[in-house]
View 1 (tube, rainbow, N blue to C red):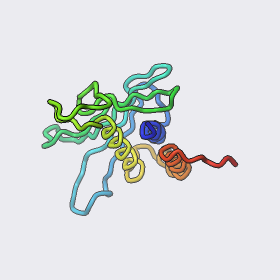
View 2: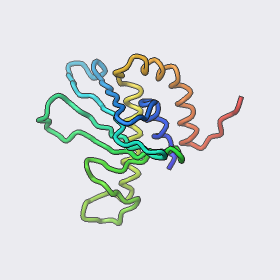
View 3: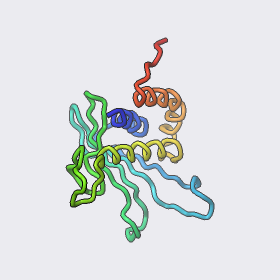
Length: 165
């Protein structure tokens, strides 16, 4: 559950205003190993907005529709009252159970949902640390606040008490 709480904060770092239709593109041009050209971008957009929840889509998109592999795509439900974000769909697969019996017909791991939430965590961290944001104003805010956010995320994950000044 701590990973979901930290993902909520990470999404807010990358998408501070959760208004319906808000979209952010993050590219990694110039950040990849030399000789490798990547024209793809991670897109984060709000597709639903309600009083206590929002649904956010995060996907890797590229110019070419003939991609040789299926690019990652997730739907994340953000619960504003609980301040948590949970993956509700991965690669168009919905209704992921918290635990699966082994073996199962879909070959899911016993903790498949937890692993997908960890994947989202790593993806959001990578976007924040290595990505080039489509908005210079947002990029400046992110770099200025990243140290404070990192401490807060670490405190949530490890349940460390933050000293109040």
